[in-house]
Image (tube, rainbow, N blue to C red; front, side):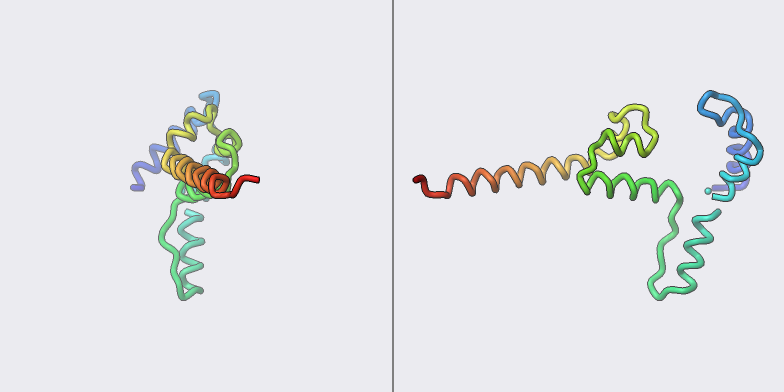
Amino acid sequence: MSPARLTKLYRELAANGDRDGAGLFPRTVEYVHAVSSLMTTLTNTHNDQQSEPLPHARLHDLRHVHATTLLLAGVPVHVVAARLGHADPSITLRVYAHVISDQITEAADIFACAVAATTLRPRR
């Protein structure tokens, strides 16, 4: 993100960045800045010490990894939505539809295997 865009973001946060539309305290805006640069610092530190480097990642990328991992592990969508701060689980369903559709396919496969297993059993 360019310095001009960051400056604009920080001004908007200070003016009306709160959930209620009120401005954030200057210290809170500083925390926001410390976090967009913490990811770069952590990645660079890791890459300097390890033979397998990590790709550049934004904090938002980690949010997606977190949500996708939870959904693939079978955590209910409404629980993931609450962790992400989505007011409505339908938002989570739209954003992560690809993960949900993979689970639907997997569920269909499990059901088909279960049906096949019961139809192949001899009757007593």
